[in-house]
Every structure is written in structure tokens, then in C-alpha cells.
Amino acid sequence: VCHTPESVKQLERDNEGKFFGIGVKMEKVAQGFLVQELIPGGPVEKTKALHPGDILVAVANPEASASTSLQESFVFFRDMSIEKAVERIVGPDGTEVVLKILRGGNEKVVRIKRGPVVPKVVESRVLEPFIGYIKLLTFSKEEIVKDDVIPALQKLAAETSLRALVIDLRHNSGGLVPAALGFLELVSPGADRLMVEVRSRAQKPVQLKTKGVGPYAGLRIAVLVNGGSAS
Image (cartoon, rainbow, N blue to C red; front, side, top):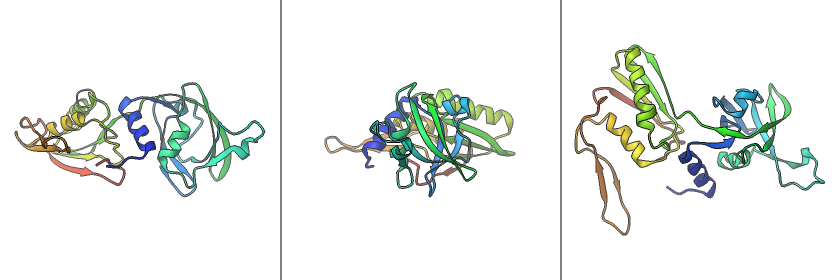
């Protein structure tokens, strides 16, 4: 996998599990970035400065000269990657970011004070009787299996008699190998199954294998991925 400087910074933020920003999930659209949802506990969820459905059009450049008007300082998101956009939106705790947005077709300027953002890493629900759904947004949290995945699976099992599980890894940004392997152990069909092989020029390949039958090995499993899923 080849990373740009921006994607490396994003990965580092994911691995830390917390950063200072505005707290939204967004996706690329023609005009900029569509706000999909607000992250619970984040700055915009508290202030309601942004709403799902808003489109982030531009961000003010804090390095613009004093003689530059606010309108002239805006840098448009139209041709910007999501990594570069995030770089401009995040920043030190308590500092302000100024955004130009579209809401209901009307242009608006909003000022948002950056604050701590702790993304929810696991989401789960019962899709229909006997079928559970679990979405993992990242493997960046070291104890994600113990703290988040197992409680989510136990909750699903308490709500329905689980026979199948949909594992949603769309837009999963990757993270820590031990965390991903810990998740695989939960659905492992048996011992000594190859999970990953680590290769380098200086050393012989190292194979990491399963330890035994996982507690959820009997479930029928479907895995969802897309272009945003880390390899």
C-alpha cells in the first residue's frame, strides 16, 4: 500500500483514536463534501452548527493576509481530496474553522470551534430475525475486540438467535494488525489457519495463524467492502 503524506497523517489520527476537529462523517460530491452524519459528542453535534445533508463547499484559509477579505480567503473543496480537506478542517483544540456550506440550496458561512472528536468504531444492529450486522470503521483501537466488538456481538445474540452475520468493512481505514487478527479469531473455523503472512526483504516470511475455533465460527458470514476499505 502506498500512502500520501495526507493519508499517513489520517492513519496516525485514526490510530490515536481521538483528534480535534468538528465531528462529521462526510463523502465526496460534485460541489464539495456531503455531511452524512454528526459524530456523537463532537463539536457540531453539540452546537448543531451543521446538519446531515449540508454540503461543505469551502474553508477559509487561516494563513490569508490581513488585507484579504473572508470571501477571498475561501479555498474550495470542489477539486480537493478528502484527505486534504480533513487536513484543513482539523486543528488545535479550541481554534476556529470557518466553512462555507450549502443548505437547502442556500449558501451560508458557519464558524465552528474545534474540539475533541472520538469516533464510534463499532456499530451493530439486528437486520432481521437470525441475522446480525456489525460495522467496523477502523482497527485503530488496540482493545477494539474486547471493548467494542465482543459486547456488540453479545448484544446481537441477546436480541436474536444469531445464525448469520454481515460484517461491514466499507470505509474501514485499517489500523493495527493485532486488532484485525483478534477479530478474525472470533470467527476462526479452527486452529492453525493462516490469517496473514508478513514479508520483508531482510527477514524470512512470518506466518500468523489462528489459535483455535472462534466463539462465532458457526455463523454464516458476508463481508462488505468498497474502495474505501484498507487492504
